[in-house]
Length: 136
Image (cartoon, rainbow, N blue to C red; front, side, top):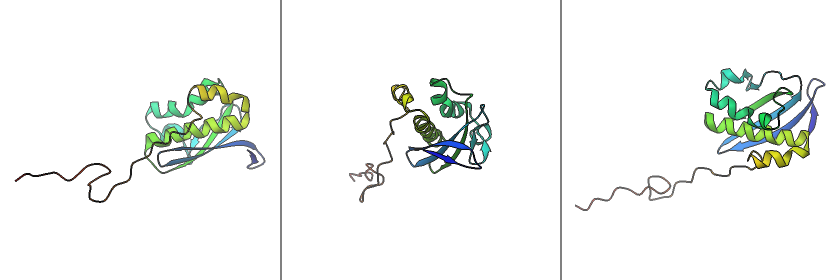
């Protein structure tokens, strides 16, 4: 989808992973900083591998210096948020150019990872953990 924010065109994608939801906007710029929840990416994600996860779709299609990425992410843990952002960036890239979908799919960035925490069952301590059995 194409929209305007302060008269600037952007491409939108929503990414999800576990309970994290990322709303991603890609602005056509000359590689501006990636902003996550109002902070630079290196400040929000202090560990370098989390930062690399976010940039993977842009590196695969060799457009890392072509977009400025603005993200609003909620829920989940830090790793889950990074993967949700990666999913959102990939979807926004497909909105920018549908021809990129095949390449991004080959690397597994388009498919939503549907694995979530299994819910707790009554009579058990967790989803499958039964109370300890004592014979005597």
